[in-house]
Amino acid sequence: MVNKRKKNLVSPDAGGSTSGSPKRKGVCKNYVHACPAYLETLGQTHCGWTFGAIAEIVDNSKDARATKLDILVEHHHSEMHGERIPMLALIDDGHGMSHDELLVMLSLGNKKFHQDDRERIGKYGVGFRTGAMKLGRDVIVLTQTTESRSVAFLSQTCNESNKDDDSEAELELPIVTYHRIASVMELDTDVQSEQTSEYNLDIMKRFSPFNEYFIGGKFALFGENGQGTQVYIWNLEKSGSDFSLEWQRSNNGDVNGDDIVIRSRRTRQRPGPLSQRVPLDYSLRAYLEVIFIDPRMEIFIQGSLVKSRLVAKSLDKTKIIDGNIPGKPVQLILGHCKQEWERMNSGIFLYWHGRLIEAYKRVGGMIQHPENSRGVIGVVDVTDVMRVGDRDMVNNTKQTFQECEAYAELEDWLGGMLDMYCRENSEGGGSRRNTTSTSTVRTQGSEDDSSATSERPHVVHNIPEVPKAERGRPKLTAAQKASNYATRNSTSTINMGLQRCEANLGFRKRFTRSSLLCPPTPKVTFVLPEEMQ
Image (tube, rainbow, N blue to C red):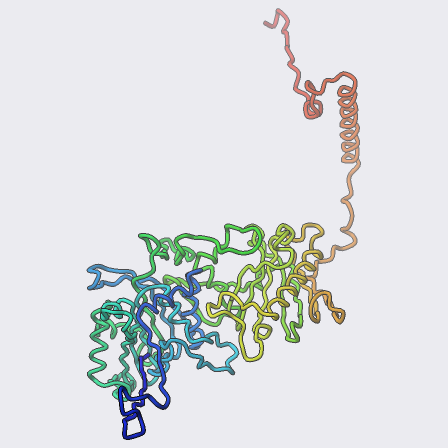
C-alpha cells in the first residue's frame, strides 16, 4: 500500500486567505501504509498451533482444484547463510494463478471469492500471508497457468534490510510475470516494464537461494503443459535453538515414518480431562488423514502418500441423527472407535465446507463424565448451521467458530444427542463391544423439543442361523456321563471337608482348596526280599 495524502491548496486569487499559509479546501484522503514489521504480526495469527498455518496453504491447493499436493522439507545452499538451509516446500498441480490473482493473494486482505462455490474454503483473503509468515520469515511463490508464469517474493528479510526506518517504510512485493505460449515464455510488458522485472529478479537473487536458473528448474517440474503452484518457505520458525518443526524420513519403507511433526509434541487444550495420545495435534500426517470429510486430493508428506481416514466410516455401532438447528438441516454421525477407546479419547469432529475446524470437541457428558463416553466419536458438517445471514461464523484461523447463538444451540443439541447415545449403549459396556449395527434417528431441533419426531429403522448385519438339529448341548455317551458324575461327587465331598475344617478346626492357613483338590502324591517305599537283593 502507498501512503498518500491528496491536498487541495487554494491560492489567494481563488478566494483563499491573503495572509499566512493557504487554507485547505475540498476532500483530503488519508491512506495507511504497511511497514515490514506487519508481516511478523501476521504470523502471530497461528501462534496457537503451527499446523493451522500449513492448513491455510493446503486449503489454497484444494480451492485450486489440485489433485495432488506434495509437502516436504528440502535443503538448498544459501549465499546469505553460507550453508545449506532447510526449506519447506508445498507443490500442487492446481490451475495456478494469473498476475492479478497473485496480487490479490499477496494483498493485505480481500474478499474476492466465489460465493456460488460451496466447497471453497478461502473466505477472508489473509490465509496465505498469515500461514506463510508463521512458518518462516521468507517465502517465494512460483505459479503457472495455461497462459502465464509468475514468480512472487514475500520477505521479512528483504524489507527489513532495504529500509533504515521501518516507520517510514513501505512493504515491497517483487513480482515477475511472463506471458506463456506453449513452452515459450516472454516477459509480460502489460503488467511490468523490463527494468521493473530486472530489479525484482535481482531482489530475489540477493535475498533468497533462488536465481534465474534455479527458478527455471523448479518451473520444469510442471512439465511443458502443466499447471500449478509451488510455495517455498525458509528461515523457518525456531523454538529456542531448534526449529519448531521436525522432519523425518523413513529408510526402512515405513510410510508412517515419513512425517513432519511439531517438536514439542504437546497436546492442545480441550475441556475435560486431557488425553496425552492425540497424534493429530503434533503429527502432520495424522492431521492430514482427517482434514477433509471427502478427500479428493492426494497428499504426500516427505514423498509418502497420506492415507485418508474417513472418520465416520471407521466407527462401529453407528447412529445417524438428522436435526434442524436453527431451522437449518444438520446430520450427526455417532459411533464407537476402538482405537480412540484405547487412547482414552472422545469428542466430535466439526467440519465446515468439508474441512476440519475442530477435532475432539467435548460436549454434554464428555466434559464432566468422560468415562461414560470413552471411545465415542461424532462427525458433523455445520456449513449451513454456521452461516448467519451473509456471514460465515468461522474464525479467520479456521480452527474455531465464532461465539454466536447458532453455535450455542449447536453445542446444546450435540450434547443432548451424545448423552442419549451413551445411555442407549451403556448396557453391557457398549464402548467395549465391537458391533456392526447401524441406526438412524431423525429429530427436529433439540432433544427436548416438543415437536421432535423420531423414526428408527435399524439395520443389523445378518447372523447365520444354526440348524435345529445342532442347537442345545451336545449329547454325551454313557461313559462320559458316569465320569462327570464321579468328578462332581468327589469335588463336592472335598469341598464339604474343607468347609468343616475351616469352621471347626481353624486349619485355614494349613489347608487350601487347591491342595485338597489336588493332594500331593504320597511317597511309596518298596522293600525287596533278601533273596532278591
